[in-house]
Length: 370
Ligand SMILES: [Zn+2]
Ligand SMILES: [Zn+2]
Picture 1: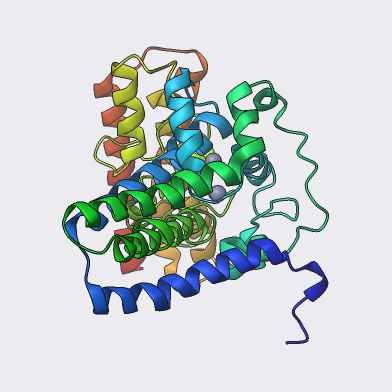
Picture 2: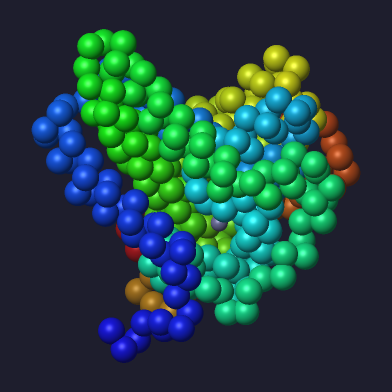
């Protein structure tokens, strides 16, 4: 207990986060056991989880923090209103923290620095006041946006009326029109699409700062802790491909491969086809593959260096050396093509990719038999 810095506790945020979590863990199960769950409450819960999570991932994150596409007023308004319902502070605050996170990832100035451990990155940074408080001098562009500033001013009112009062009113109305007690309906609305949904959406967002810097692979870069994980992508509406995201933060896609689970990317693409958003930013395929090949080569090189320490692995090291040489040649070829802005066909890229995979497989086989 002595280690908790009570003078730095952010009491408002802490009471909210702990209070809602306790209600979701205790109040919600009691309600479900006693009264069950009606279809309307469930549908509203599903709608609110999707709307709030998408407003954070598509709006707060990819649109406002990273400017990865341009948007008309309709999408801005929707994501700002439902973003407020996530109770993760205003978009202006969120984007400022997030831009700091990218700029100083894994270092002291990163507000949710994972090197301070899972708890700090997940929720600790919110329970305690940051020391010193970030100056918010990195969101001048957003300060010029009237809608963003309107949301910044009224964020708690918007969140409370649309995120809590509205589901209470809707569930009370539904119960009354089905011959049930409107008071019981109101309680269900408060607990299920209200509190339980807030807690689920918040922790799924917090996972991006904690687990997405701990679990999964690093195919694009090991210069930071961010990782790609399909499991985390499922819980975070596509943000789990975090290694890619930290490497190419202005790309509107996080799961860049067509098959990767990224509903936020699909939503942005669909909105662009409907003419509601424009200017989707994509990193050219050649540059993405170059990052992958560079990382494969770096991993092979460091493993080879390790193996050379063991005299027993001497015979294998010649073969491994040859593989690393080949990876290096391919890397420099592609690097030159990308620098010269050569138009690379899909087939050419696939060939480079397949060869890299084949070489890495051969490398692993040789290491295993060494
Ligand atoms: Zn991150
Ligand atoms: Zn980001």
